[in-house]
Image (cartoon, rainbow, N blue to C red; front, side, top):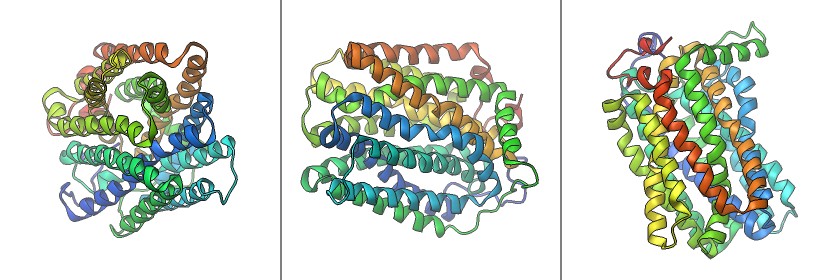
Length: 425
C-alpha cells in the first residue's frame, strides 16, 4: 500500500504517526469504524430476527456487501490514483450515512421492505465500504513517514478492533432498549461525524495519475503490477483463499450463536462479536512487535493459523466461558495478518500506482467473500451449520501452513529493518 520511503515520500514532508494530521484522521476513522461494526452486528441481526430466518439470505446480504470489491479493484482503483483521496473518503462516509437513514426508516416501518431490498442496500454499502477501505490504505503514506508505516497501520488496526467491541456493544444495547430503528440512525451519525473530521485534515499532497490513458488500461496496469510482484501475488492469493472461508464464519455467526450455542436475544448474541473484538484488539497491540521480530511473512502465517485454529475448535465447546476465550484467542490472529498485508502493499507500490495496486489486491482478496458466503451457506442449508463450521477453518490453517513455501515467507520484511525497495521483485 505504501510507497517506497525513497520514492513514495518525494515532495512530501515525512510525518510521524503521532503528528496532528494523522491523529486527527485516526480519530475520524475510529468513529467511522464504530459505525462499521455496529452495522456488522445490526444488519444480520435485523435480517435474522425481523425479515427472515432463511440462512441463504444472510449469505446473500454478506455477498452483496463484499461483491463490489471486484468493481472497485478494476475501476475504482484508477479513480483513487486520479482523484483526491480525502474527498473520496468524505463522499463514501456520507453515502453510507444516507443508506443507514433509509435502513432506519425501514426498521421503523416508514418504508416497507423485503429481504431483497436489504440485499440491494447492502450492495450499496459494500460499494462505499470497498472504496473507503482502499482510499484509507492509500492515504496513510502521505500522513506518516515510511519507517513509521507499520506502527501507523497497527494503530489503525487497534482502533478498528476497539471499534468492533464498542460498536457491537452499542448495537446490542441500543437494539435491546430502543430497537433497530434507533441503532441504524446512530450508525448514520457515526459516518457523518467521520466525514466532518476528514474534511479538517486539509489537502493531501501526492503524485496523481494522468487521465490521458483510458480507465480500463490503467486498471489493467494495476492488476498487472500486483501479479508481477511475487510477494503481492502470493499475499493476495492467501488473502483470497482465507476470505473464502472467513466469509462463511462471519456471515452465519448470528446463526451459530442461535443454533449451536443456544444464545437468545440481541444482547447475548452481541457478546460473541464483543469477544472477537477483544481478541482483535489484543492481536493489533501485538502486531508491531511481532512484525518487527519475525518479519511480515511469518507474522501473516502465524495470524492465519491462530485464526483458523480458534474457529476449528469453537463448535466443539459448550461452556460459554470457553466459547468466549477461544473467540478472543482466535480473532487475535486477524489483525496480525492484516497489518502485515497492508504494510506490504504500501511498501511495494510506487505513489502513482498506490491506489490501483491497493484496490487490485483488495479485489482479489474480497472477491472471494461473496463466493464463499453463497457457497458455504448453500452447503450449510443442506448439511447443517455445525459440520461446515468445523471443516471450513481447517482450510485457513492449511493456507497459513503453506506460506513458508512461497515468496511471502522470506521476503516480506518490516520497513524499519529493510528498505522498501528490497521488497520489489
